Image 1 (cartoon, rainbow, N blue to C red):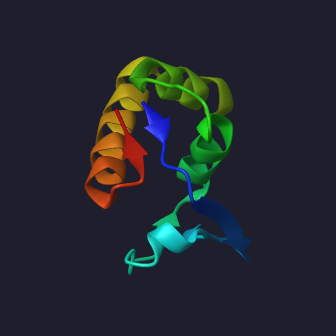
Image 2: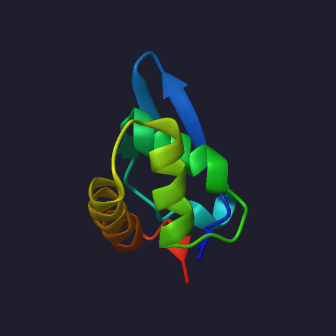
Length: 89
């Protein structure tokens, strides 16, 4: 998988927003809000190839959680990112 080009992660206080930056994204009419862990993952994988295992390992390295919890969270996160159209296979 890869993040789609044309998005920039911006932090506003405690909020993290993914903003469409390029002209071809002008039809993108939603702002994507991310929590701290989702924003950390986005920063780590932006512009790189990644898979669910990559995200799972990043969560376990950065937070005190076990593999089952990390895998569950990554599955939900990837589903929401795919539905939002911000990543591609």
